Image (cartoon, rainbow, N blue to C red; front, side, top):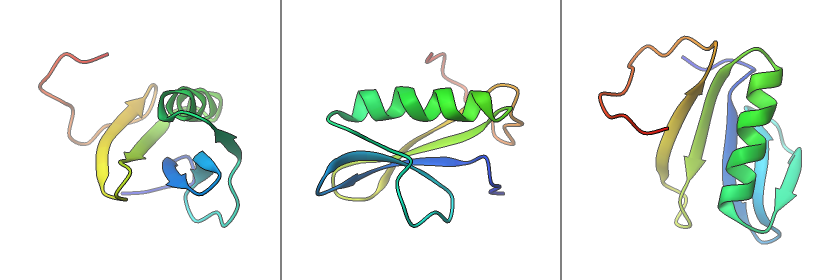
Length: 81
């Protein structure tokens, strides 16, 4: 289930952008995916937690992270941090 605190990291011609769910405009633009992912997690944390979804260069979802205190309905079995 998606909500307004979900943030997406997507590639566009200007670089890697951080966008809120349903937003037409980017909240920030970054030269690397790693920078954009870090900013997205910061934004979600400031909003009280939620999901950060990250696309690869081809536009397919490659990862999704829950930022505390979000409610992850399918917690990962791996130990990535």
